[in-house]
Length: 259
Ligand code: ADP
Image (cartoon, rainbow, N blue to C red; front, side):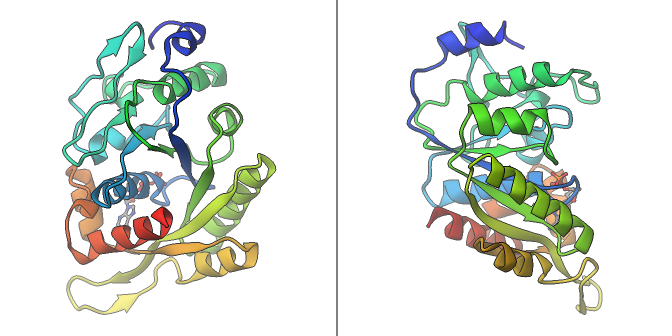
């Protein structure tokens, strides 16, 4: 990245007043990156000055989700400037620094150092920095909670039992680190068939809400499993930027988060 960790720390802007909120999940593929991107876009629409860090160092997806994969961050004195996106959300991701398809084969300390450079960038007047964490509870997540001190965490899970066990583990990780869990979001919750209109629940329904109640953490809402969410996400058009029913589902979660 941009020089050693020490250099970046000494040249980073002093004492930012911004708050950091981590978005985590116990396992991959539950829609954590999709939710992070859309929450950021929805919060920006609600008037919050929000920035997004893609902390999934080994598997970045935010440049594609926000449609700015071709852009490179500029840097001054080895401190990066976030990359703007069309949706009012500046973002930094390893995906902006490494060619697509090229593997990042780094041990934990290198990845944690990279995270530091993404977080301690020139975020300017951003007041809320959302962090799309990698799935699970490894080195990058530990550095995140210990060094960057998020004010809270949002946990994403599907309604499925297995995913929920992992989500509960993620909650316990934040709990042990002294980071309050702001709430839980149930993604891939209910599927409406685009052909016949019938609604079904491939991963079950309501499981995350029940798990949140059991853990005593707020439930922030359901996002349906929806072909349009997948298609628009792949095309770099976050559904939360529009007023479709899919967009409104993300906006509803963002409103509860902003409260
Ligand atoms: P994670 O960050 O948890 O690994 P992603 O956000 O990358 O998960 O999502 C995994 C895949 O599922 C992506 O192809 C994404 O487009 C798709 N996806 C996520 N949420 C939904 C949803 N609510 N409806 C349809 N597809 C979704």
